[in-house]
Length: 282
Image (cartoon, rainbow, N blue to C red; front, side, top):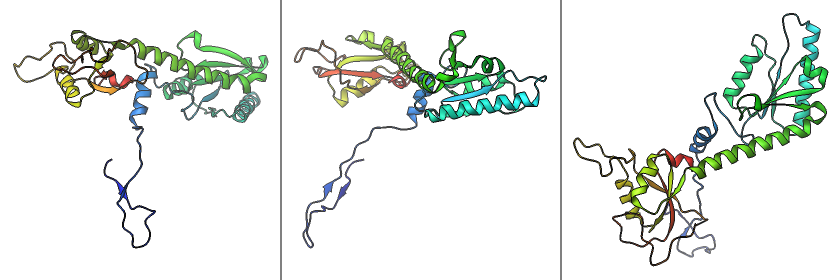
């Protein structure tokens, strides 16, 4: 917001001083961040939420309880599950146990996967005898997601595994972003790159009028029989996303032209452009 002023606190009684503009900033943080997280990390099985921000980092699910299990066996197993949860809580892990009756372990697995819980621990008679827990990572599909941790190492290994999941999620997202970031110096390559779900790093003059022209030129128009300016243009035009702090080389001051074919200005810096879809990757 602009034009916010306050009275000068240094003014003495009866003294009039010009109003002061307030100091403010905005990180632009909103619920959109949640949407981006969901789009980047999740899969067809449901949510995948990074361990640092998820409400429940670990869920412990009892397994191996059957109709033939006695009440004593069930009670003993549940007590061990509660003890495991205490061990993890002491290690500052946000943990829950799922001991609900009437639901199979497989049903519970699926529900917690849909919720995006990063790590599932399975504990049954076999685990109890072997003094270990079976682990299942949410961010990996199939047999590679499974592992084992000795109970004596639980308080140490689970936090390390959560850190690894966080790191792997970041690496995969960063790799995806870099793969879909294209350095463009010719307008002929700009719209096709956007249409291929990429963001484009282009030499730009940093003028608002030029940015508006790029948005207009890169948009697909729908006006009866009117032909679009670029038949392959995405339905929504490109907009500037940011001026990266780390600027690649290639712009020669006083020589390199702006990528906009209708702009006569010289490029000031590399600027990242994307449309409605690709901008969600930034």
